[in-house]
Length: 622
Image (cartoon, rainbow, N blue to C red):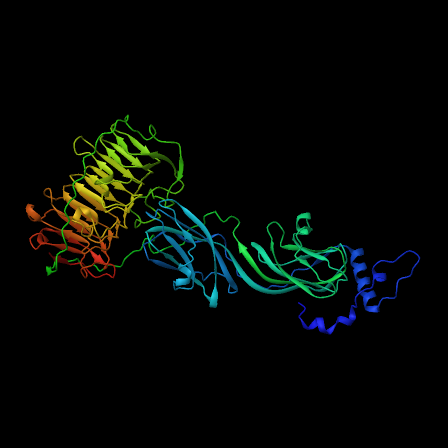
């Protein structure tokens, strides 16, 4: 590329042409041109005779490329104020910037997602978020992040509400140094085609073009492919000044170009330079999903366990507050005909959550990839509450914008999302009738309150099962007030929590993944349960005895104590089995996986319950 010194060194080589040089009048003879000028015109004439010249590709050597699109986060849950560092180690060493598509959805209120360079969230980055999500709906944005200081990581930050985040790399820019044309003479109307020799999949190239010694201004266009189109010629990259150096930078879209560009000169002989400044590699389609990379929240991880059994050791611990069971407001029958899966549905299609449900059963730890509505399911919106009164009703593929009341037996709810609505009374997204026989199987379904409230639970009742259910943004996901309940292969997480909860005299919420006030034949198998302040499972015996309970193969964490067993007026609990569970240590009471009164502890069946670090669990005395 010519530099500023050239303008001082060579002005005598190309003196300004006089009028007679440019336009010979009839009957006159042109003045003699300098030998150098004649040589330049000869070169231009030679090019005109030869036609467009193809310049061979630059020599690159090996260049690392990344298959695009590349998904780093797939529906990963970020809590309010949480951040997630994403490693970009597979990018080329000379990458200077990355462009992502970021998505966020199922936030109960708008939340801001920021993507910052490096591994630290800065105030400047969060002040300009990449995406402000809509409430409960999918938000999508494109953001370009510079990789400053050799950074090979970015950090995604969430501001105000729990949200599921996707992050997909759609393109990246690299800096390369290459010179394609150097002091090449182009005659008026002349073109030359350059093979850039860039890696396959390159979407665009940023080129620096320069021209000088034109006797009058001329337009230089840089066009994709092997020919200069009319549209490209209409928008030239550079209009040169007369006799002096002009430079410009142009970004050329290389889609369908075969990795070539054509440089065209319009109206006066000119010497041209063309250098590569950078190039950008992009996916063929920014909206196409790639296989998700493994994340901590969704990967099934085997935890090493000692072979010894846990013992029921009595340890005095301050007992967490037992939760009083809220009394659900009686549901009033609405003057609607019996609802079925299609009878009251409105034909408005909505996208389902992107996590897919696994049909294989209890083979993996439940999380975003194998619970809730299966990926690709098309949902039909049902506006308002749904009351089911016909035995054997199947609800399939609905997006229910209200509450579901089950007043029938043998009901199946599958491949659906239930959101609820605003309410000033205690409700459940799914309410099992206590006045008429009712039973239901809920599977491959998402339970998430669109407007989280102290009044909204997930499911309340008895004689129901949850399989591969994703439940969040409710105070309690499951509130059991009777017999025959099974929860398996499900993900209960991110409970709604309120500092002033009217159900607890305006003190903080007593949020639980599961709360049991009475019942027997209760099964909890292979679930992930987290995100509570009070407990993962709270047995209150508020309404009567609790027995024949099996809690097995679950991965749980959080709460004051994760499992809280209270006797109240009904005496010691018996027939409760806890086996093969993994407990986290993120409890308010230090290392409190299970707490029980000393009169209940000897009656518990305990085997192979461990913390995540392999230490056996002991029962704390309440």
